Image (cartoon, rainbow, N blue to C red):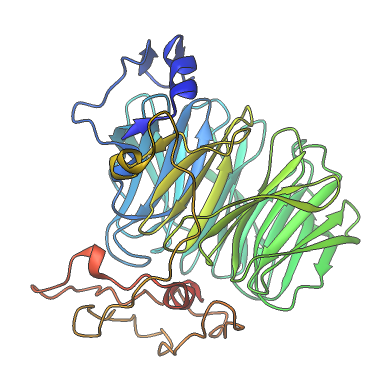
Length: 429
């Protein structure tokens, strides 16, 4: 692993700490007891979140019932600080409390996990919603957080007591994401019913202020611009739509060739980042609605993307490429695998290149997933440039050819087929 020299030099020259954490980095001295580089991450990464200069990643050994994983990373060094134990299935979403004292994760088995970051111990496991819980978001003032479930509900939790404040029946189908506006007044929900909704969440059991209709397929993600005047949505129709605060459509951004898994605005509102199962992360200029950059080079589906609080860095989580971080201004990766660094000319950072199509593993080499009883049979998914057929909205994600109960001769992870079409099939609910 080789850090981007300019970035590493700037960070290692200072001392800093993350509020609520007892770990302190001074001059780049912070290390885990067993240093694990960010580029050596092996499991699925389906969610990423920053707090200060800390990065949390959530995922697991599969998209479903195999053990989940939550890691904390020191972005200044690229090393893992700790594993937060307790996730028994894939972790779909992670979020820091605004004061940095807690980390909350949601998982495929319906559990909401809350860790105390000072002790790095699991503080509480909350169970309210039926089915998987796909998303978590904190209110900006930290007093409450919301979780979004497969059962179409949003549960609002009180942070101090970790008790339920209210449950909002938001959609008649699964909800993929929940988000709050920067002032905390509005809440957004994205659903497989092909709509997103804006809410006055404080009013009674929740009051819908606008329904954002216009997507042709499941809506996976919703995000508020920092000023609250623009909302972004995206999903399985491969389109990103921009809306005003009243719910009127303003623009459609096209360019992704597969389902868009996440959108997020930069802290200053000038950029929008999007991740896709088509193995790309894109940056968009919000002002003129144009594509600013395509951060290709992935070899598997990209599930999540997040900006650091200062807007300087961007992180994305995927399968075989796992966890990657860029300098937003230069578009260079902050850390690169040693193999890539060695291949780069002296004095140059390796550039992200367009990936070659992955060679599909044979059926004999790749064990098949033992689906839960309610899973629909997996069907062949068209190639990346053809429309993807989505299974019924109420189905949990069908795992990519990875056995839930792996036989003794199970092929190692790097032999698993990772082409875009098969991973698109996994993502279907």
